[in-house]
Image (tube, rainbow, N blue to C red; front, side, top):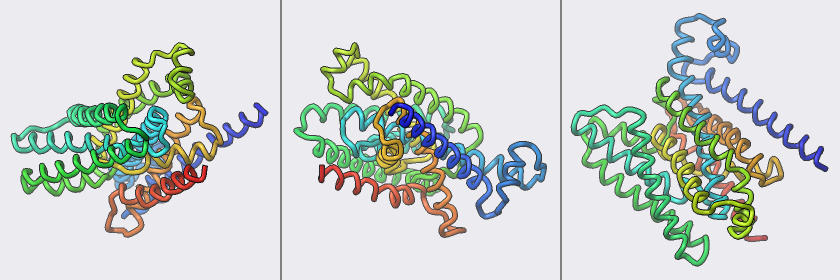
Length: 337
């Protein structure tokens, strides 16, 4: 029995890794100037020295593909952490209003900086997003102790998201005309415009938070069986809550700071990988969710670029199109149970 489970896990991870590699090559090769996957791979390995191809791949498409990998994985991991923490299958950064809170503070800081002529670095953007995400998360946490069921918690999170989005739109009206277009494009969610320097900051934050989440696999597993059980197993509940809040807020903030709010990834992907591996073990699902989120976002980014080329859709539109049916399926399945 254990051998069959191990074989299933190995085959599942191999499938996700191969799929991620294929999608990554397609992300590098497809666009307004098409390259073959072999040419794109040649640029990465140094075998292809064509200047135009090198510029397209290294300066434009590689940072975007890396952003889809890292931020997609971050969203999915954050979604799994929130679902485990609140014990709710449709909890996620976007649904609970955490992404909207981060969006509000980033927009406010961007507008203030542009009005005073300051240039914001990656660290400042992530810091501003983290403040908004943590504030929204703490508010939801306070509300969770007062509501009678988790459905009310989700509704509260959605309302928080609407309020934050409304305040953000109001703040945009005070921005300079030259910045309104950039703010609007960012607020719709997109992996375009990511620079090579941004990917280094992004990787450091996301991989550090992911490693922290993975190291908490056993406490998360114990917590899923109830607080009393977790305490009996030696889990410090207060420390556990603080760590989960920090990790999920940091992952959500990083996504919002660089790509804007991206919807439904954090809700849909953890359930898809659970169905693939037929388990809910955090030790398996956390890395699987990261890989699954990367594949999902790379696929959606390709669709956003290619479906109506040369016009480009926001990636959040595509993730909502594919992710929303998964959320409906989850709710219908839970209702039957």
